[in-house]
Amino acid sequence: GAGVSQSPSNKVTEKGKDVELRCDPISGHTALYWYRQSLGQGLEFLIYFQGNSAPDKSGLPSDRFSAERTGGSVSTLTIQRTQQEDSAVYLCASSFQGAGGQVEQFFGPGTRLTVL
Amino acid sequence: GDSVTQMEGPVTLSEEAFLTINCTYTATGYPSLFWYVQYPGEGLQLLLKATKADDKGSNKGFEATYRKETTSFHLEKGSVQVSDSAVYFCALAAQGTGRRALTFGSGTRLQVQP
Image 1: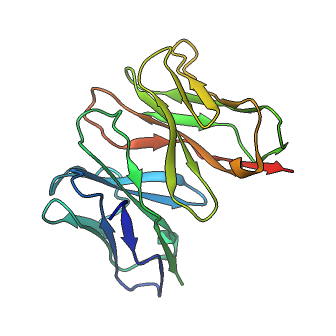
Image 2 (image 1 turned 60 degrees about the vertical axis):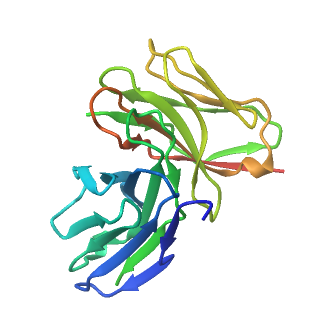
Image 3 (image 1 turned 90 degrees about the vertical axis):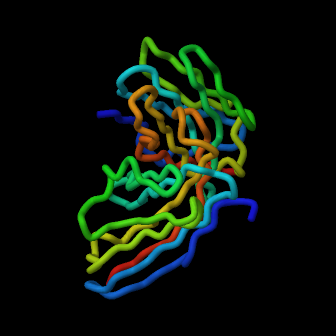
């Protein structure tokens, strides 16, 4: 595809349930990022992948959050035992290479998660 | 740690007015600086960037100059249009620290009235 895609676009879940969010990066992009956009916290970094490894997980807010990337492509962000404060828009971005901070990150449309 | 501070919005302007959105940063070393824009119902898009001091990024009539002495990267446009209504995010990417993530400001909503 032409851009970063994410699914689902919207997810409503009950407190305590697990959710999986998916990101398809731009083909050939080796770096992949997850961010969270919420009203109270703005845009926060969650985790960064270079290939299939995650050298920076410093933004994951708790051990309920995990992510994996397979085949250097698709990534899944999993939130276990969701809480209401997890409600946010989860954004995925990819870039051509992770070396250097000046490489443009291309963002997907996001997944809006609502925890009831 | 790194941080980005933006002016609070919303900023409401009439069409053809001059726009300034202030952005200042705190970072170790010499970061790259970005402005991203989020139009209603759409994802974040890169608007412009600057990678070193005194660089000027420009796109679609918007400009921002990397000012190391004032640690600023203010966004300007000489004549705004209704179609510029969006949320604007200032961001930085650290250099030489191994950190790849962008650090964003809180965003500034711009509303342009006809």
